Length: 132
Image 1: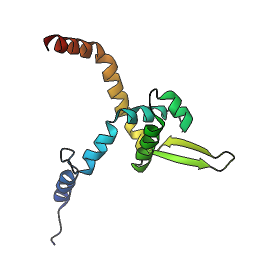
Image 2: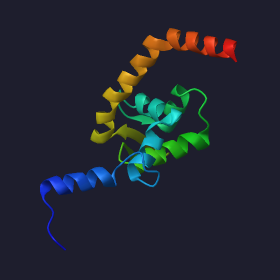
Image 3: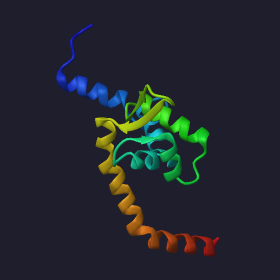
């Protein structure tokens, strides 16, 4: 097999991680990142480690099953770390990893955009609903 140039390797990575291809790992990561609970759970960890109960108390409406599933997915993807402290009872804390911290500015931009544009979104919804 011939050796690839740096440009060819870069192009191969670009094709391998094309988010528009359903079977692509990037597509699946985008699915995780766009989940409504992911952003909220990550946002709770921006000020430091939190226990499961603290996260559940902050993220209104999330079920225990969904919180557990979200935490496991984020841990698996390397966005947060689960730390177990041996004591009675056992203490479990969740904290953002450096990869998780790198996502926070993007989430902050999205949150800011939503807050700034809600009036326009409400107006668009009302116009759409009136026309339909």
